[in-house]
Length: 487
Image (cartoon, rainbow, N blue to C red; front, side, top):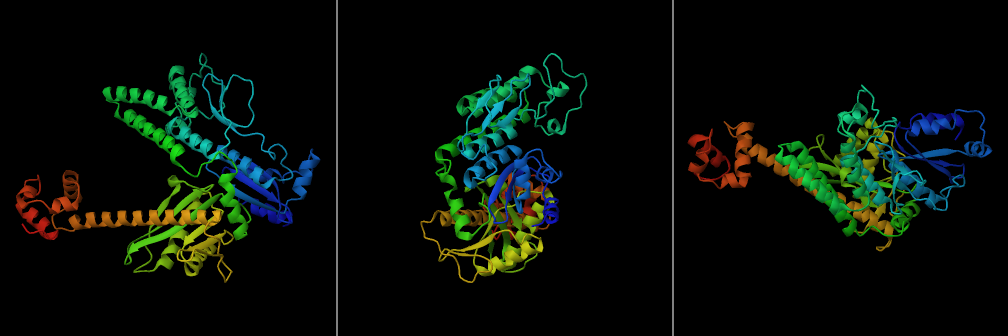
């Protein structure tokens, strides 16, 4: 690829965190890097006609193509960069090729500390947690910390005895992601309490942390501060959820390489240009064409991430048509991803055969994503269909790559059925009552809140239902008749 084509491609890169992989003319990966902004970081390589470093000049001269992997944060990008370097062993990556530097979580020694992911442990009075050999452990903790124990991310030189007189807090404080020490919206003691909570979490002392939060939750409830009590309750639940996952998740192993064996196998068997670090799995569910739902599940590094699952109510397809329903689902999914610069997968898996695959590809081509690797997994023979190939790929039933695709397929199927049932039940519970003359949304809500379900309402005696304020005997008889129950 010539320089002008590379620059044109780079201009389309997202202004978001991620990892970039540089390839030479033979397709080999020669350098892997991380970035807070993929567009800005990769563009910087091509802004100078000459470089102070001959090694850098040689790298840029050898670039023929560039791939990117979007991540949710720059911390995740750093972790992924380290793992990919260990897999690909690029020539121009010197420091991390042998895997000697694993990441730490660093809590700085400032008066109002920050959380940083770093590979370099220094003697600077900061608190270091790690090193983390298993990337999932670090990723889960970083996400949990960002959501429930967020500290400031700015690099303002804040001193406890010399805070700024008047500073307008940033958007993070407005969103509840920072206590706002820069604007004196919290004391040092309040901020330090959050830091202490976070250290307990990162050190794996979930039980001690939960006990501390329980006491604060009870105190907040007694002071009638119910919002704060609810926030603490949700935090405690999240802590226990993470603890259970660490104990029960059979995919986790002590070997940092074992968990990527299925990804390497899929790359080899399917001829993928990159490891399928992120896989999106799709399925459709309906009842005789009614309440059709399309879903996508997301697997990262071979492990499901339910927080990224999405469901779509199919609106452009009538009757039973799984093929066009699949096309609509993919179109809406990736249009949303492109509009908001969300991460795209390295592999898309469709539950079905070659026809479902054709309709899925039609949606992707229409969005300019035709180069995204896409396969279909047919359940009966566990055959893998890929575009442009007449014969399916058949892997052994014990093949780690096939087992991973099966997990993605089965999870997509489970999520699709659950989503369809929820939509069907919601539609029934809504229409069965709201279609009755004299029943508005308020009365429907009142009855469902009091009795819990349509089935419970249908089993009432007319006098019991008529005694509900605002119902009366006439409307009660009308409701029970509509639900096929005689008065």
